[in-house]
Length: 167
Image 1 (cartoon, rainbow, N blue to C red):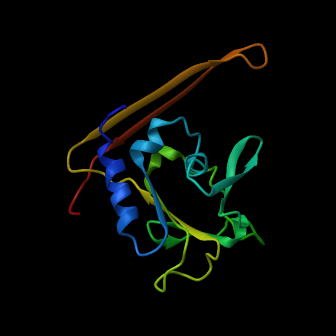
Image 2: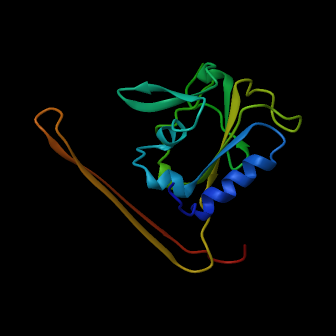
Image 3: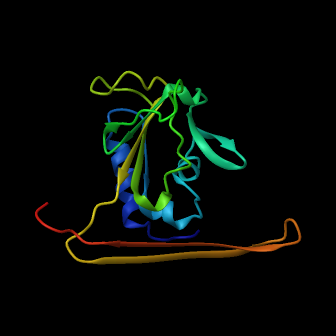
């Protein structure tokens, strides 16, 4: 048997899922940043019953429980986000970096207080907020792939923030 402590954010996410009135999945920042996600769609695609519609290998649209991407709703901090493309309902999630998101909540069933346009489900991105003290976070990932004569792969991110003025 292997025993280990869960990350603090992951334990909070599990408690939030357990106490929710509907079928909810929460993906905290600790899990998002612990894996090499190119964008927020790749991070969401790691959750159960969520698949991605991919373009050139990179996650683009989210499909919840096998429904079409156009049947899912996207909100950022609770505010509906319309598609920037004409004639299309779904929002491309490959343009949102995974490091800008504090957590992702996926509602797989609608409640009475939610908009009815997310028949397949609703994805709510919670963005990071600056803390009281200055913050500096540097992340780096590196690796080697033997595909196509081999090459080195790296990804570097930096986040700097501080709250100014009243909350």
